[in-house]
Image (cartoon, rainbow, N blue to C red; front, side):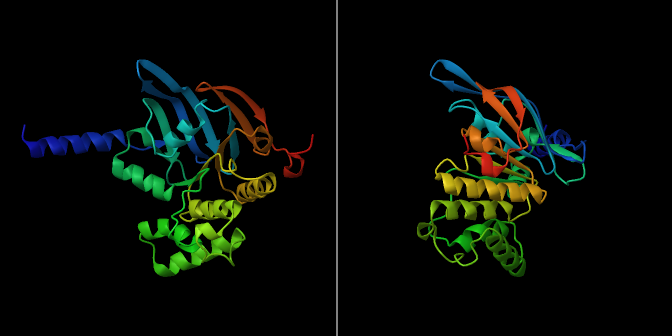
Length: 267
């Protein structure tokens, strides 16, 4: 078989593996039997062990657990930053029930999913130090080739919405930790993602700033955004709709959340 014919055959196989499946239109993301292992020396560590999860539109879910329980690995797999050994990660890519499995997408498709469908928020902000708050938020829209007019309207709207209208031209070094995290939240929202994935978003913040960030998450949830947050802080986790405990790569417990933000630090 010629090289050209092999390429055509491989492309056909790739298209077949990424064929859409129908899912409930009200589901944003469904995870089925997700497994991820790492090899350290002569040992194999199971970071995720047949994890199953469904997130609905407008739902705020918190995943709690100690360090090493698999929380960050879960976020990285769902965010297409790392790849599972087995299982399915199906996104409702058109918002109407057309599901695509992230685990078998091409690299090009994964890049588009990360850019357009997933809003990532990190503990350490991951802002470009030489770019202003405005420019950091605008960057995903530039990469997605949005028009200058659309970029300006969206970025200014988000930064004003998040309370940074007067500081949008400041560099990250000129902003507090809470302000930097708000910039990160704005950047995560700029391309209208299906879901926000937040990895320890308040881990470096004081109590007051943590409360303010969670208030922003609750406002976003009430506006229809879907949020998955992993955290070791069980108090703030209780403000989410559901709180799921991850232990040694396995979901071991789930409780109903919804505790008022004003009560999270009351004894």
